[in-house]
Amino acid sequence: MQALIALCLSISYAVNQCLNVHLKLLFHMMLLRGYVPNNFSLRVVDPILKDNFGDLSSVDNYGLVILSPTIAKIFESVLLIKYGDYLYSVLYVFF
Image (cartoon, rainbow, N blue to C red; front, top):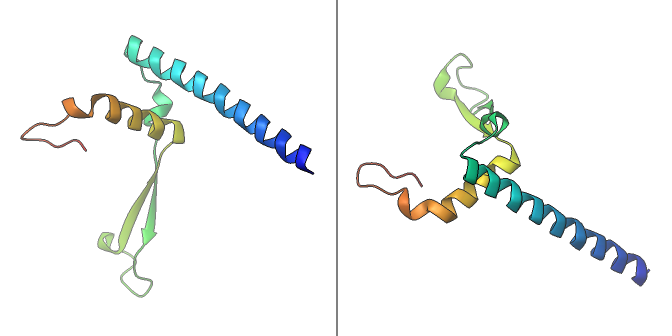
C-alpha cells in the first residue's frame, strides 16, 4: 500500500512539474508575441435567481455568475502579479 501511495504521489508530482513547464512556456510565448487565444476571452453567463418568491420577470431579481476557463484565470493572475504595479492609475483602478 505504501508503494502505491508513493507511486501516485510521484506521478502527481511529475504531472504537475510537466504542466508547470508547459504553462510557463505558453504564457511566455503569449507575452512575447502579444497574442492571446480567442478561447481565453470566452465566458458563460449564468443568471441565478435571488428570490424564489420575487418577480421572476424583473432583472433586479437575478444575479449573474460568470464562468471563465481556468487557464484564462491563471493567465490573468500571472499578468496581475507581473504587471499589477503598472495597471494602477488615479482615474481607473484595474484590480
